[in-house]
Image (cartoon, rainbow, N blue to C red):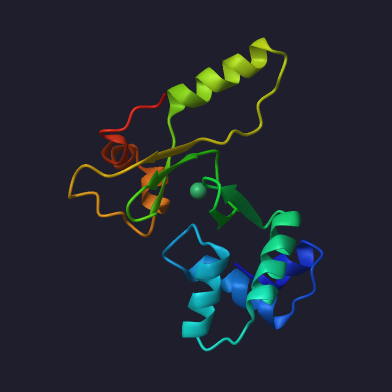
Length: 164
Ligand SMILES: [Zn+2]
């Protein structure tokens, strides 16, 4: 992926903060990052960007469609790259705050048909499930890419959860 070309394509000038933040999302093992996560990770990486800059760049990336903002409960929002991403829901651990992705064909189709029945062509949905892991093997993998792609990971992640 060419960060510069992508910034240009989204109509944003390739400033250093934008390049750093885009790269961070691409290289991080953690897909879902809050503004604070981004700020802290950049600090560790010796990039001295202020919190205000981080917020501003994240908002610009959201506006231009590079990032998607997910509101998880009233006090927390995380961002994730939109590229190559299909619709998915999120599971949030009440204890660790870890975010996992899941996809379920039945839920997807059901929502599509509910929407169609009301004359809507579904383009997206937001599902956030809150709970806590009940088993040790699910060690809140930081890289939730796997969880979104593999049905077995989804099953592991949703064991013990019930969608209301
Ligand atoms: Zn996600």
